[in-house]
Amino acid sequence: MDAVQFLQNLLNGISIGSVYAIFALGYTLVFSILGIINFAHGAVFTLGAYLTYSLAVGQFGIGGILADLQIPFQLSFPLSLLIGAILSGVAGVVVERCAFRPLRFRGADPLLALVSSLGVALVTVNVIQYLVGSEIYSFPSDVYGDIRPAFVLHFGEKLVVIRTVQIIIFAVSIVVLALLGYLISWTRIGKALRAVAENASTASLLGINVDRFILYTFFLSGFLGGMAGSLVGTSFGIAGPYFGVAYGLKGLAVIVMGGLGSIPGAVLGGMVIGLAEAFVPADYSAYKEAVAFAFLFVVLLVRPQGLLGRSQIQKV
Amino acid sequence: MSVILEAHRLSRSFGGLRAVNAVSFAVEEGEIFGLIGPNGAGKTTLFNLMTGLTPVSSGTFTFRGTQLTGLPPHRIAGLGIGRTFQNIRLFKGLSALENVKISQHTRTVTGLFGGIIGSKTSRLEEIAVEEKGWEILKLVGLADRATEIAANFSYGEQRRLEIARALALDPKVLLLDEPAAGMNAAEKQSLTAFIREVRDLYNLTVVLIEHHVPLVMGLCDRIAVLNFGELIAVGSPEEVQKNPAVIEAYLGAE
Image 1 (cartoon, each protein chain N blue to C red):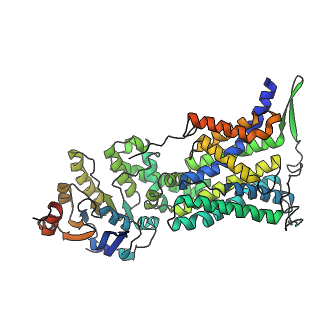
Image 2 (image 1 turned 180 degrees about the horizontal axis):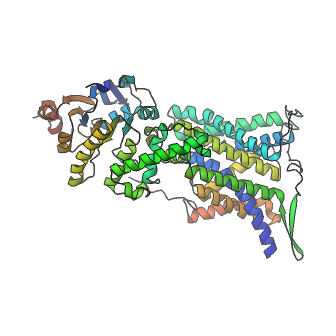
Image 3 (image 1 turned 30 degrees about the vertical axis):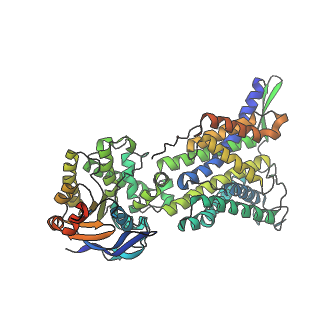
């Protein structure tokens, strides 16, 4: 691999890694509050992608029972992305109401919510399939308006191609990350969230309505998941209703790599997995995920708590 | 004096164990009320029932006539009942000031959106919350370390910070679960004065669980004694000390 090829891979990795980061943060937020993985996160990712597609293109789809059903308006891409993500946030709230809250209120083992969230994920994916079919959806190339599709950098004979989508993905992800960082570190809501994450019962004794903050968390998580799904969808197309499931697994690899419950860890983990994939040679791209997971395995052998996770000290 | 807290036949069972069994008592406004008893007598469970952390099995608990049984913990806290814990439960990753500011969360009016965008009312509230936080930290003598994270504090300081955090809730009643645990003799001495000072300054009613007998006897106006989940005596320190049932519970029957 020469320097130019290296640069190309680096840029590809950073772009996709930044989406992995915001997607994985959705898992992290819920994990740090409830201590469990929300398996419906991948389904929300799919849902966000379809919602953004529908709003930007002005029709629901080309297959399923909603085939050719027009939406009476068509929104610009940034607006579709934002509204798609907000609706995904609402979907996150619905997931909490259906899969998590009823079990929590009845004092069920938190682990059971893992199964109920998986159930919600499967139902969601099947409903999506019923509504819009299982065709591959690609965003039209003019969805961003009149911007050129790619920038080409010349290095003598060699070329480095940066697709506009990659720049958009990176920029949006960074803005989202910055806003989330601000929200959590500096606002009162963020501080209350951190308090709930550290000890929910103590927070409730200080007058914090824990259930409301769990809802906020699921909204944020859904927002991030839907946003990530939309960004990946615009870049690679939506490969059917199940495409979020594969990304869901990758998201899990990211948070485990970064350290469960660690926000900087999720960002770093996303970047590491994104880069690991980008450096898989094109001829072997079918093995991308295997390489990413093998990399994860090696990291965990050295640091079982993840890159930025704190090791658990068992108190007896 | 009027009654501020009233428990009527409050009970809680865990499986076959009656941790708290038909306990009735009334706490008067402004009093320092002690709760003592051997280990496992149900004192902390009683606190958990009073603050809504553990649902009651039967019986009622009222605060100034308002029924508290069945309310979620954050509502009970919002009505003005603050507490501390036997095993300190500070937010260790937050600074002392942030710990104290968190409890004022319920008192502010701006919602989620105002808090995020930093609206004018929200900023004014934030200033008020901050000032109050400093004031309380000064009272407990931790103002000079306000920005340090709670994990760095010594045990005694963490206890004081936990009391500060409960005070920031603007409570009418303060429940202290073994406030003197782990303190040395000098710290225990100053704790007595400190609890009285806080009570007078904020017009509080204090209910405290404590094992250290001299401290309880010297501090409390009245004392209730629990044994095996049942209330065996209530009265002034002198009365309780002479009560044969109490002597039996602590020393065993002859």
